[in-house]
Length: 244
Length: 233
Ligand SMILES: Nc1ncnc2c1ncn2[C@@H]1O[C@H](COP(=O)(O)OP(=O)(O)O)[C@@H](O)[C@H]1O
Ligand SMILES: [Mg+2]
Image 1 (cartoon, rainbow over the protein chains, first blue to last red):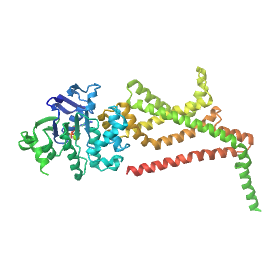
Image 2: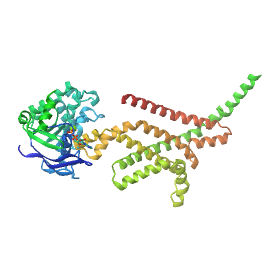
Image 3: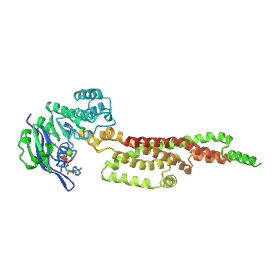
């Protein structure tokens, strides 16, 4: 339970001349729920996209479940990392059921029958049992994002990454997605969540990480971060976010 | 008196250009030409489609030497006039020991050029698939091949239906160039029939047949485009 499943050591990521991550160190223990907060452009997305190598880091080390990733390594460990996107990115030409079943069939080698059974079970879990035959475009944003979560879960990942999963949603749909995530947090899966939902961070996070300018500026349990912030940048960030 | 003359001249125009007897006599010849034209067109369309897809993937994802070859191929075969290519294949290649039948030469020329145009169409189609689709597929752990076949290409193919149909219409039209290398296609048979009957009716018939075959496709492209425009809003 206490072994680190993600270890980032001095991770640097540049886009051309621009440095988006300036040597980030982060350890996430198995089963831990880490929430990443920070102003727009501070490198939150880049941080979690480096973990599953949607962005390849230029320096430092990233070790996932004991295996180093990146720098051209072909590693199967990344199939243990699932991701939920801000814009859902469901496959529009497949039914909801297929969306969820595809990964298990193509990557885990399940038969379609097995995978669709698993998919149906997961859709039930996110409250979409009756939507399986529909296409993504026929669902509301909140429903689409719950399919996105089911799709990631279908791979039975050890780590789930969320990149602002509720930012593209109408306000009335944010709750249904956060509820699903909160349920998930109790199952023992490791979660790294980038979000602006401070209520969620307070309630669900084991640890909150605050980023600014491509660096982790402060981290700690939610109580500490929200009640006794030390860094002035964190203080002004919280003031700005919590004032409305 | 004047009206009689007019009636007479209209009759003679019909006799000349739309002579029923000549039409009936030469129809079998025209239909055999049509079969050849369709076979040639469909062959070139299919080969051009496959070749274009491969070229597009090479151009987008292959590493250096292969990619450059694909780029060069696409540029060269979009620059060369099909008629010139056809004449080169049919009349010049025999000098280096490669002798193709007129069908083989025509099918090669049309496919080689169609592949180049199709490649650019496929490339645009693949590039029009949102980046998030690639990322979601990679995040799931799909192999590059599965990413393409399961996620990207089905979406890209839907996007390219109108321009690929347009290109297929062009290929069908260009089959008429094959009459230059003595291939018995619709146009060649029509000119033959005209010579035999000493009457241009077969040529008019051939023109009408081309229009009847291709106009539905032209309409179809219009429908596709209208539908895309509506969905894009
Ligand atoms: N693909 C990219 N190319 C160039 N710059 C990028 C790219 N992705 C992110 N950046 C830059 O890196 C910085 C951090 O971006 P990001 O990680 O998306 O921030 P956040 O998620 O915290 O809003 C920003 O300044 C952004 O403009
Ligand atoms: Mg972001």
